[in-house]
Length: 191
Image (tube, rainbow, N blue to C red):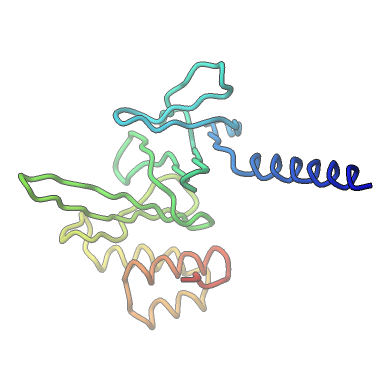
């Protein structure tokens, strides 16, 4: 009886481990909408690459061919988007996904011995064209009020949330992310 229990326990652990491993799989989604489980590698220089099977050839992840990718070990989703006014797609990390999508780009500039890191957020609703929303830099292409108005327009179809946004008159990274999360899920962002 002890041997049978042990065999069942090992079989159960193997099945659970297999299911958990499959749930943590990298993937790419093509422009046609095909979802492809794969293994994604991040080279030191150059574009991300994906491989469908261990014996297959690695392919570059290009924004003109791939709509979205997910790297399980980093819990990172990247999506091919267009910045307002640009005809060339680029990948941006997605930090909130739903009816409103929120993206984050971190730019690092080296000047002599000084390193400056700037975080910029972009937003889209209903399409793959992103608008400037918030930056840690002193300069952004649109005025703060223009960016606040663009974001407010995205929230207008949820009157309660829109009224909260207008009443609070806050435009911090934390407040924006919480509002997007609340809009998409109906739940406030947990800290």
